[in-house]
Image 1 (cartoon, rainbow, N blue to C red):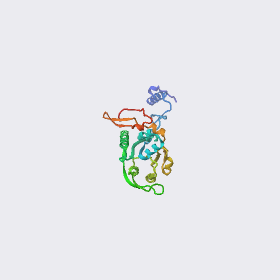
Image 2: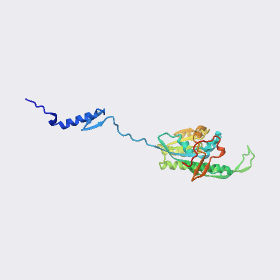
Image 3: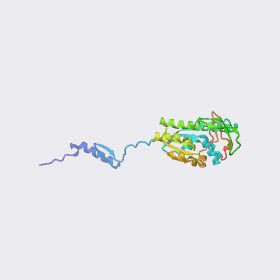
Image 4: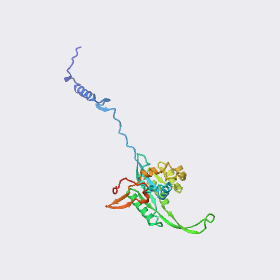
Length: 273
């Protein structure tokens, strides 16, 4: 039997052979290529990786508990701390701080100077993205202990509503799924019940405790029920100080009190960011 070798140009499979040659030639500079169902695929190409979910963080700050901790640490410049920046210092890169709530009360029963300091700080925090949830001071009758004092009656003022406001805010935000991580800055064990409620009813959520300076030993009950715990130190406070003044519409609206400038902050002085 005789076999006739046809020229490639007239071979019945010439179109396919030409296409394969072209693809092989194209693949010389693309290693790991292969043919499958007449389609070139790259084995080096991988499936698209889903982005890592961003963890939502909300921060709940017991204002006077933090204030007195800073006082005990003996570093008055720490009173001018940027609370949003302080909270961001503790969160991982996969998290974003959405809300910062400062629970405090204006000390109207104290001097004009102290009230001015409070107003300056409250305005500066507001312009730095912190929400103020206000309580109040209530006058209360008290009596000096007879065994250790004079036994006389006197008036004193107690802060009211701030701890309750913090507890309600923490629980309500957990119930409507507004956070994955809640940061609570306090050393007040009265806040154990709301933290326990969130941990027990929303086990997928985390509650991190950050104790004010020098107060971690007082917060052992809180540490036991929190997902993680930290203690603020002077270095963290100094790293998170706000600029010395804030302006709006060309007018200065908040100024760092002189007695809180023990270590002057030489950072930005421009107006509201």
